[in-house]
Image (cartoon, rainbow, N blue to C red):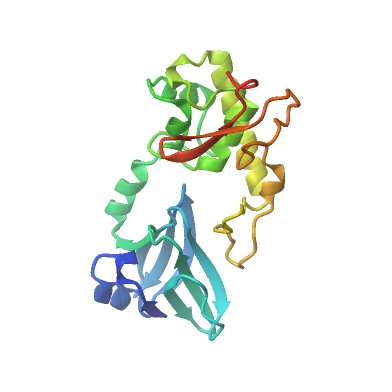
Length: 251
């Protein structure tokens, strides 16, 4: 395998060592935790762990060797007649080689994922914090894998204002939110992700996700509430993220 690094700031650690270690390595498996990907590779009968964090706009594209260069293509891996390209518009993402103990430590810092290993009781327990509910949902140390789009949608479905203190939720409201989070994430997976106006999300084959057709409030500011209550969807900034809600239906 040949490794090409065009933007050295996207590789954490020594770039020369990075390229040397990965040369002649073989991809074995890909794992995911939230937006952190772990590529398990094999070289000289030893496993190598390459982590990649997508952050806001990072993505991997699988191309044929020699295909025209992609926009914001910064690091790529040439394997046979294929190229795995890491592209990132904002360049917040990164690639890093880590040891098994370091990988375990990194993964332990993430909270449970709602669709995998989170029970209702644990979800409710983690909500007992004196901070707005939406930024709490986005805190990957508390819950893994809930992105901004899905937090907005889940809070609308559960009829909870995003700026409400998490600790103020009743057990009934928390249970509704737990169900809503699972529903919006499952819907996003079914429709292969959400590609919105900025087109930042594409799958590995450069195909956009189709879940935007299911969005109820995200990027709908100024539009009428889908519950037909007569109120318009509002947008505020909360925790630095665009936040959409209906002030009539959500309390």
